[in-house]
Length: 339
Image (cartoon, rainbow, N blue to C red; front, side, top):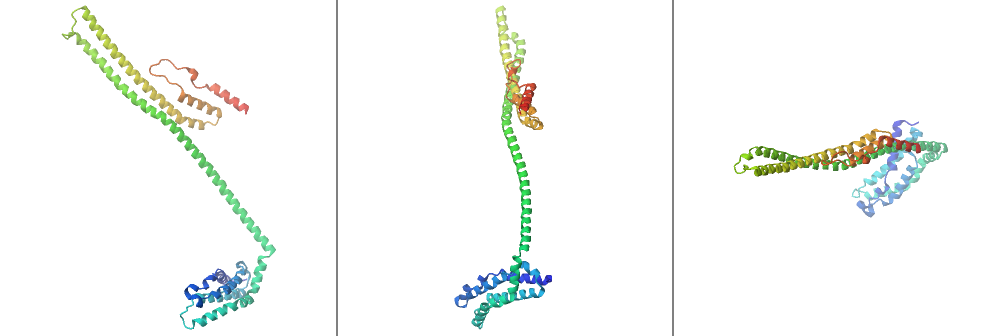
């Protein structure tokens, strides 16, 4: 068996010459056609091809002497390549140096084959050994299986993450849709609050007017040009006071009713907004389909049922209200039985 240092040196030398690009030896651009090494490219390719027939994984089977032989040949040929790359056409006797290098490369292939043929043959035999190929094939198959299992696990994990992300996106979109619908009720609440504040101001003004006229009416009969002189004028004064009080009272009543109406509408729409925003949490908290139907029915009734106004008395028609819990539970049980 080879020592580690000799093996590493041989591997480095063999890898370097196997990866060498023979096209760089031409140097026709900087040396010109007459002094270029275009004729060295093909011989160099033959040498590199011979080195490539020695597999790297076969080096560990050779002895130190055999590795030194491979390493020495590879370093010698690489040195020739280095001479070509460092060749200076302006140096003395450059033509003879160029000719000697080319002659060396043209006859080098046969000499190298005599030195390395047994290593090439061993490498070919080793790579075509049936048992070795079977072992390598099994190792490759097992590696593929391991990688496929790993990819399958990653895909499964990615699918779970994607499903979670999709569910989160759907939940956010649903919540956004509910929030968008609830904003209409919120806007209505703000409008009704403004109108209620407006009519509350009118109520205060009409109430102040009634109070002021009541105080004024206590002293009206003492005014000289208003003071009644007889029964007819007294009756006329009383009728005028009553009429003014009736008109002011009616205006006060209408203002207060309008305030009550708009305030009532603001409260109802606020309740509808809250019902729309919170019913989903109640539905998700209940695992039973029947309970979900009940919550949904009551939320819909709260949102869409008609409301009383400030000018009506009594309760609205209960026939348009939500379905009873008993009816919903009965239908839910019937659906479960049918399934």
